[in-house]
Image (tube, rainbow, N blue to C red; front, side, top):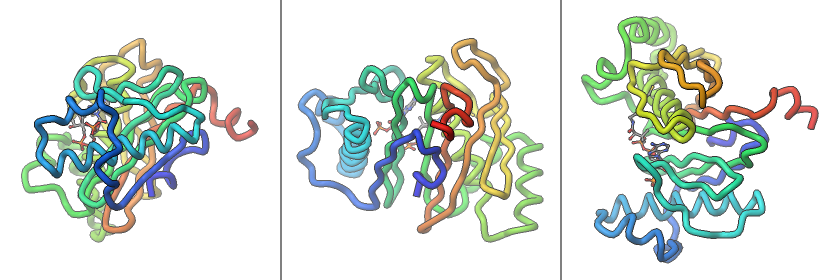
Length: 223
Ligand SMILES: CC(C)(COP(=O)(O)OP(=O)(O)OC[C@H]1O[C@@H](n2cnc3c(N)ncnc32)[C@H](O)[C@@H]1OP(=O)(O)O)[C@@H](O)C(=O)NCCC(=O)NCCS
């Protein structure tokens, strides 16, 4: 699913079920030692997806530890992002010569719980969603906006090491399946204040993804 909204230089592994429990490295066990079963399963399968995707880049299996504020510590020379929600786990990785940063997020397909939208979206963003809802009420536009903002954070944090509040990026969703995030705070490590991404609704789930290339997309296309 999420591979459909990422460019070819990003390698994806995803699962709609969980893997057997024995695939963690000993160094990863302390990260999950006190977790409840549900959390343990998503962590194990998320790491499994990450190692599967990294293997396709030629990276041998190894522990993926947790860095500052929960960000995965990717092997040297690689970048990536992990997401999990009920019924879905995925990892997206690339070489750091291909890309600058990646952020992916998957969510259950239903609407956001009451009251959440108002805490993550501006009145302008909410008004835009209202227009989209009038045009196509089958799509949970509020959940797409929420997910897009989480993808923005996952792309932002590994580069900057800084918190980014939901109010610090304005996300414009396009009904065609794209979105643009305008960052309201700048950081030189980011190199841009605009991130573009894509969204998809499929299999009762939705997902968003951002992949910032190191070179212009045309160069990637022409090889
Ligand atoms: C970190 C956050 C984005 C995770 O999203 P989520 O929907 O709760 O959970 P997901 O399953 O999609 O993603 C969890 C994975 O994200 C990754 N992650 C966690 N913190 C991260 C960070 N600071 N940077 C990058 N990736 C991070 C981890 O791999 C984690 O899985 P793991 O713990 O099993 O390794 C969310 O919990 C959060 O803190 N959001 C607030 C910040 C924000 O979104 N701001 C919006 C800016 S516009």
